Image (cartoon, rainbow, N blue to C red; front, side, top):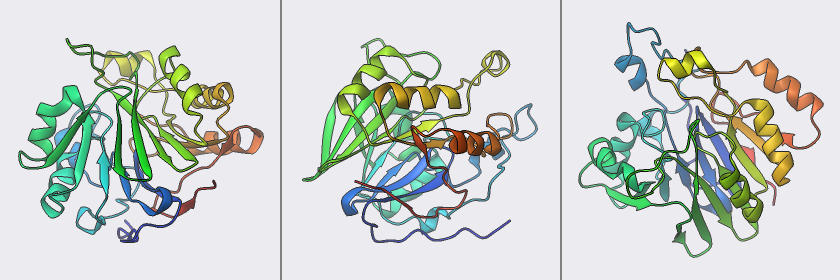
Length: 274
């Protein structure tokens, strides 16, 4: 298996790196935003010997110890491939002043996985935060097959809108399209949508594995909201929960709107246009 490679420590102006699954390092305007990093193998340990052993299909792109300091870490929900204790707890230990933004209903599990002393910031749907004067982050609702609210009406699953000056990017976390999301995206008008494309089916659902939008649904969402660039994710990690890369390549070859930008399995730089 190839050795993990390095991500630049300093932010790269208007670029992003895919870390596999839903994980990205995004550098809007030179800031460093880390979302849902899973550069490890904790799920393979947890599910060894089961029907779904969670064996990695792609190499670990970067070691946890080599992850550069982020300005903010966004966590869309509490599933381990998004809120990984083997990644986030060491990060919090290395960078104790770094904020970890999590859905408000996930605060208890976040304390257990990230650390009692970590700087964990709860967020709710439509709430905005400003980690830097020119960096704005807003929480969007997400529906991991179904929208789930706690007893206070707060979403368990989020996506995030990231805005730097005129540049707008949306990361869906785990979600399917649904009216409340489409309405908000229409108002936000992102130039880039980072969308899961592993789909869903009755067998996975029956086995307790919630799915996401299909590739066709992701393309349709971008067309509906007029998002010009689609970056698919949540594929190529686990054999039981992925889509064939050739299907994405075929869609990219035939679709002229949106522009499908296929991320690489190792963190190669993807430039972002304004």
